[in-house]
Image (cartoon, rainbow, N blue to C red; front, side, top):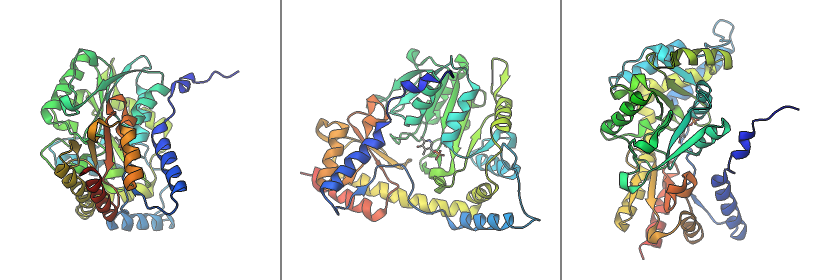
Length: 394
Ligand SMILES: *Cc1c(COP(=O)(O)O)cnc(C)c1O
């Protein structure tokens, strides 16, 4: 009989969003017709920008004609798009060759697939609260996970210590769910640590476009990162590509471990395991990096940032401690009166019909915190903020 990957038995039920759906479903059953103000899920709500739509249409038309039809695309990405993305990094003084840029169908895909390059004996360090997929992808591989809790004492930005000894280090900045962003100095500590240990950092930069303060968008802005880091990015949150699927991964050619070149390994992996990203989607994605595209996506990001400000003003007024909101589309607030995450969830749902995400769902150290997404509808966000003020202002 075939032997199965029994590591799957070690996965915990991913109960977070399931539980939220159960609770909201039950509430609506008991209170038919009630409107809910949904600020839970980290998905965008605004459509793709015009510059992207125009290119997508043109790409579809190109596929209809023999002279402009595209078959298989290069596995590591359209060379022109790889070059465009390398140029995008140049704006932050990060020099990349186009062979160091890999076009992907999204960050989640890459965060899972890239684990193929590392031994199952290697250990993974995950700073928590964390994006749940980091943990699960490593459980599936049977890898030992070291949970690195963060909290108010370090502003949700942990530093390396003796307890953080691991081979694969996950860093997410701006962070989902806390919205915290590492400074260059803080990243430098991790980079030096990884280089000294021979570890590899997986840097998730999915929210880089939301940074408005003088903070690093890419870990490659930090000296030494080229010899220890893989950076994974995505157009999902930057440009509304959650349902369209396009991302990119940076693997410097200087990144070597055990005498193996990780860039070359990834080329070998991609050319074996994928046939590249759709021509149509790559053509649409390229439009994001034009000046017109940048202007348009930043208009959308400004809408989400306005939502964040509306919520932050109310939390400030109430004197509630929170993180994020400024350089990230999430607000991570401390539940009032020492309430638990789920207790606060129930309170908001039942009293004011506002739905958020309990912090405990992102790891044990998230207990007592609550995440609001600012990707929602502006009017709904405004009403939700007023209701929160009314409820908690007493
Ligand atoms: C949304 C998100 C991503 C993006 O994933 P895609 O697969 O590109 O849609 C990656 N990392 C984090 C932390 C996220 O929140």
